[in-house]
Length: 163
Length: 302
Image (cartoon, rainbow over all chains, first blue to last red):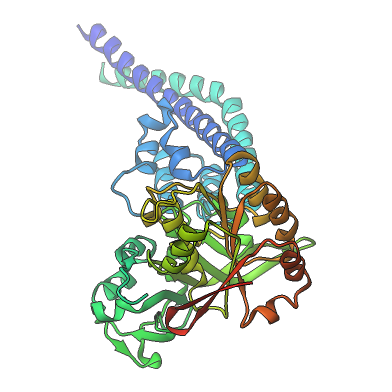
């Protein structure tokens, strides 16, 4: 019985480690999804000059939907401009600091500046997100192994202590 | 204009372009003031005013007229919010019109803007800061051009030059001409093309008529385009300039009747301009319409 309990404890902690490692992957997915959206905004503006309401209204992405980013942007009862909505929505993504600061900075001028400046800002944000994503992916595998190993180790230690 | 019906642009339709602080004040303005109002003006750091019969009227917090010094002032945030609302939160969409100093409204009309311009080799590129906004309150006087429509009904349509000093109603006359000539009231129902370069002639109240509208492009391009593709019987355009000369003459050669406006106190003064003289010599215009004070209309054969 004690052995069964110890195994279950180790599994529980290992599961926690797996969850923690998946959250690291979620961050990568969100950075990737945000990058795709920024590319979409830039190319839509360049090609058609359509307003942001149409750009965001017609955009679908599972990752951005799940974390509430698109709901925040497309909130039908909001009277705020897209710059303010973007600021709120970016905070839902829980991005790494550098990416979040850049996304918030660019978002502060979203829909408020001329075409050339708007495009330049979006290109800048694309680059920042690209670099951030590369960095996150590089460290992702290592982090996932660390989370799983450490959590299993903690489970084993606690099991031994309790036994 | 006596006894003529006036169709007002719904003033409240402009409220959606203004911050709440200002719409609350405007909602309290008495009806008798709105009747003569032509503009709503916002200026950073200055009192918010409406223009009534040519005079600027400042408003206090209760929507009552007050001395300019006592009026509610507009802040930078008010202007920024107004621009966000005018541009539907997408300023880049209006890149081209902003260079020309205005933002067209989706339901007709336009908002004039000015501020700190950024210039390049080809002129103004954009504005780094917008500090003034002028929302025009448009009105349709459907029977203003009644005398001209009556003349066309009797003698057939002919090229017409509408002139007056600024602010006396040339644009209103052209609107009425578009409505009456394309409508059934005088049995004319002419295919009418309106070349509305600065999106200030056509109003939603003019819908339902046989009017094709091209806006947002230079008049010269618009005139050529509609002549080629819309086979109009009448072309109406506002504020002639030199670049409109060739396209207008080409359109006339295609058999299209032209009704256009120009600033000026007299025909002699207008035809002293070389391009206007050229148009006159080409025989484009058979009639002149002089708009005077109090919307008086005087039609003469040229």
